[in-house]
Structure formats: structure tokens, C-alpha cells
Image 1 (tube, rainbow, N blue to C red):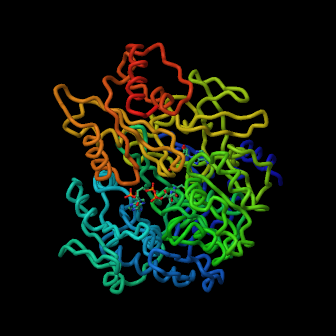
Image 2 (cartoon, rainbow, N blue to C red):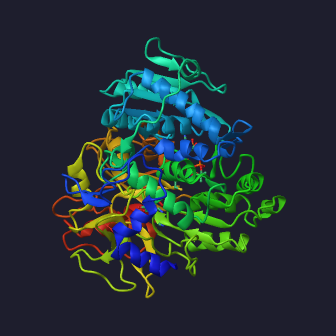
Image 3 (cartoon, rainbow, N blue to C red):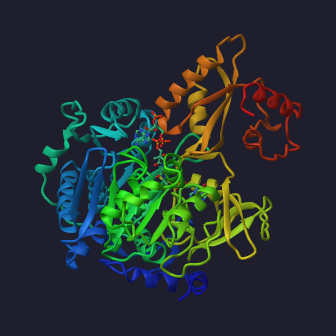
Length: 629
Ligand code: COA
Ligand code: AMP
């Protein structure tokens, strides 16, 4: 079946389409309903079905004779380690850790926060939670203590799993002081933390609360899989929304297993036994879906890479890993290839490696800018470079060129066409559908396909308000864009206050909350401005309190430090400019998009609702003086 037929069928007969895909999942009890709505009116897939996501990822493969196959390759230039772990070994390890969690009183539905670097224990921790029906919430290791505290308070975990340190290039980052500070800041206190001690930096453990991972694991006995409902939560993953408070995206077990299993063959073109590599971090949705669950559901070998595209040891790192482990399908953020291109513009290091195993190159996480696309495609002759667009909320692609169904013509700047299950439209503010080349809000008609989130943790109203209130019956993606005459989708960027910094999704509100804490700042706005390496970086515009006299450079340095401590170094907040006034509407809404376009040199329209039009020229002059324009 070609793409067009497959896509049409998914929209005209979603239940038939997805029940066929559900047949590939080893259910304990088959679903009673393919699709219906819950008491909140949210669409739910596979109600009545019982399964266990750890069983789908590990036990089924061992039962089917894949026990000896490598499940996970831990490749860590950071520590000089390459280690292969078979399905049998990963299963035994996970079962032990699951038993350890049960012994700490963690049961079905309880939350476990995981704040860990890219080590095999992190994958084991996630699967162990799934095994006993507990809900994991992985927090990216680059977030600072207050961000971790906010997630602890929202998820209220019984236990937190962590490690003594992470490694960034050659820098050791101790995690324990950040964890201790987060627990101090949080109102909710976990019963225990379990700390995986790494040789690079050992953590001090607090008697009674902190346990040593290795001793804890050694004393544990294996736990079996607990059957859960298809609609039970597997994990919560916090992501940035338009306010400073992160949103807990909830993923269920059944729809997730079905959609991810489908995506591995249909989108990524891999099958059981193939080697698949997503060079992301387990703290992001890409890591959840395509370092851990997707490849393991499918019976692939997945790679956990604790390194960077460059300087670990050089810009040939990606080619080395592909060649050494015979990777068939590789997935990474464009920013990573921009880093490679900067250090090795002619891609000379690639020649040292035999990368003939590579069949597909996937990119996502931010817009694939045409120059990066052309560079990459020129250096990967015969390997299609496939941009695909997706979000934490969906857990898998909304648009992609589907390598396993039918490879279509690629167009630079476009993630091609919608994936089966996604009825995509482009709407204007009035909710009218736009024609070819007309830019508007990208929305998806309900119901969303399996794996898409059914709610925001503990706040269903926020789910409704943020995503479904603007255009009833449609999911608002938060991205803007257009389609061409053949329906190819072009995703141009966020239309809300979310920014994307080096493939990391952040909210300007999150950074504004920290900047506003500075005693000299009366009011501020943070905007995401274009950056050649990182895609976007945040910039602060501040109004000072009356009578305050500070050196702009000194203030900027203090704010940079505050954002590093309040949000994390990943925010890449380096620029803060003092302004006299901020442009606002008469109702007080700050016109961030106008300021962003002004700084990026794009055409902007000043809305008629602006409070005082004179402020635009005044702001231009200030930004010119500050060398921003
Ligand atoms: N723990 C602690 N600190 C971290 C961190 C982590 N897990 N990840 C990044 N940081 C720090 C960095 O060390 C850096 O600190 P510095 O300002 O003191 O130098 C800062 O955060 C900024 O990091 P980043 O913007 O990521 O730059 P980088 O040079 O460290 O790495 C890339 C560049 C391209 C390798 C990296 O941005 C990347 O891999 N991005 C892709 C993200 C991704 O996979 N997204 C998911 C969609 S596919
Ligand atoms: P996250 O939820 O962290 O995966 O971030 C999702 C956001 O990243 C999307 O809403 C987009 O703004 C952006 N994004 C991800 N992939 C792409 C892509 N292929 N093209 C354009 N933007 C993308």
C-alpha cells in the first residue's frame, strides 16, 4: 500500500486501521473498544485492553527467542565505555530494579521522578517503573534545582532515582547538590532517593532518605510485570507551555505501544534486529520514544550515547558511532549537525569511517533550515535526509516522509506530509481553512491518533484551555505554517511563547519569572531570537525600577547567572537589554512577536490594539543603540 492509500484509510476508518496495528502488540487482554471518549470527553484508544509496556519492550522478545540479541549499546565517549546489553540481561536487570522499587512501597499508579544522565541505569529505571505499573517522570539533567522542584511538587513522587553526576564534554556536573536543593525547595518530600554512584564524582548520602543504588539493587528480588489498562498512564513528561509552569504531558500505555511500534517500521524503516540510533537525551520526548520505548517495542538494538556531536573527541563522533555499531536509521536534531558543520565544514572526518550501513537520516526537534538540509544531503549521497515534525504532546511524528511505506520526493524546509492518523488543517484566527501558501495555525482535527496525550497531569482544564478552546474540535499544535499546492507542510515556528533553543523546548515565561526576580527589574519580556547555531536563543528586555542606577553589563552578567541557576545552562540566556518601555496592547499584553520580528529583521505588523504606537520607533532606537539591530 502506498502513502496516499495508507493515509486515507487511517482517516476514513481509524478504528479498522489502528485495530490492525494493535494486533502486533502482545496484550494480556485484547481491547474491548478501539476508540471512545472518557468521562472528560477526551478521546481514548484501546479501552479494556490490558498490557505491560515493559513486557512489550523486553519479555516478549525473550519469549520469542531474542534473549541473546543486543537490546542496548551504551556508548559513552564521556567515560570511554562501550557496553552491549542483551535483551535477557536487560530484562533481568530491570526486573531486579522493579523489585527494589516495590520494596520501597512503590506500586501501580505511584509516581517516580528520574533525574539521571545518559547511563543504562536510566533506561532500566524507566522500564522498571513500567514493569510495576508506576508512572515515571524523567526530568532532563540540564534543568536547574527550581525546575526540578516544580516537577517534584506537581508529580508528588514516592521515590526519586538519580545519579551522583552527569558529564558534559570533559566537565563533571554533580547532580546530588541540585537534587538536595530541589527537595529543599519542594513542598512535597519523597520517601526515598536512590543514587547511582559514578566514579567521576561520588555523592554524599543522607542517612535514612538516600539509598545507594548498587547496594539497593543487589538486595532486591525480581518483580514480575503488572498488567495495566491501555488507558493507564505510563509516564508524565513535563514540557514548556506559554506560562512559566511546565505542563505534565501524560502518556498512556496502550496507544503509545501501538503507535510507536507502527512508527518504527512505517516511518523509520526498521525491523526487529536492526540497529536504530536516536542521539537525543532520555529527558526529552525523543529520548522516551526513540531511545527507549520505540526501538525496544520493535525488537531493535538501540544506542544510548553519552557524548556530543563534537569534541567527544571530534566532529567525526556521529560517523564513528554509525560505523562501529552498524546503525541503519539515525535520528538527531538539526542543531547537532550545525555543530558538526561548523567544526568540519567539508565533512572530511566522515571518510575515516565505513557508514555504508546507514539507510536513513532523520532529523527533528526544530525546523530543518534549508542550508543544513543541503549540507547534510550533499554529504550523505544515497541516504535520504528526512525531516519530520512532532511534539511532546503527540509522542511521535505528525508529519514525515515515511521510509517504510513509500519514500516521496523531499522538499527542503518541509517535513513532507501528515502521517496516518493526523487530519491536519491550517486555520486563520477566525477558524477558516486557508489555501495553499497561506500561513496560519497548524491544527489537527480530533480525534488525535494513538499515543497523543489524553490530559495534562492533575489539570484537565489546562488541557482543554491550552489546546482545544481556540478552535473547538481541533488540537492547536502551537506551531504556525502553511501547505504548498501538493499539500506538503512547512512548519515555520511557534505562534505562542514557546522557544526552541538548540532543540530544547523552553518557555519565555519560565525565563521571565527568573529575570523578574532581580531587585532592579520592574518589568521584563523574554523573546526568542534567531541564532545561526542554536536555532533560537532567548533575549531579555528589561525596564528598571525608578531611581535604580546599574551598569548594563553588570546587570546582564547577574541575570545570566540567575537564569543558569533558576532554569539551567541549557537556556543559553546571554543577552539582556535595558529598554524604556515595552510595547503592549491596550489590554496589557506584551507584543513579543513584534519585538522578535524586529530583532530578526523580519517584516512586522503593529496591531491596531497597541497602547502607544510611538513606542515602536523608541524601541528600535534603543535596540540600535545597544547593537542588537
Ligand atoms: N546537564 C547539564 N548541563 C547541560 C546538559 C545536561 N544534560 N545539557 C547541556 N548542558 C549545558 C551545557 O554544558 C552548556 O553549558 P555551558 O553554558 O556552561 O557551556 C549549556 O547547557 C548549553 O548547552 P547546549 O545549548 O545544549 O550546547 P552544547 O554546546 O552543550 O551542545 C548540542 C550542543 C548541539 C550538542 C546540543 O545542544 C544538543 O545535543 N541538542 C539537541 C537536543 C535534542 O536532542 N533535542 C531533542 C530533539 S531531537
Ligand atoms: P518538543 O515537544 O520538545 O519535541 O518540541 C516540539 C516543538 O519543536 C514543535 O512544536 C516545533 O515547534 C518544534 N519542532 C520539532 N520538530 C520540528 C520540525 N521537524 N520542524 C519544525 N519544528 C519542529
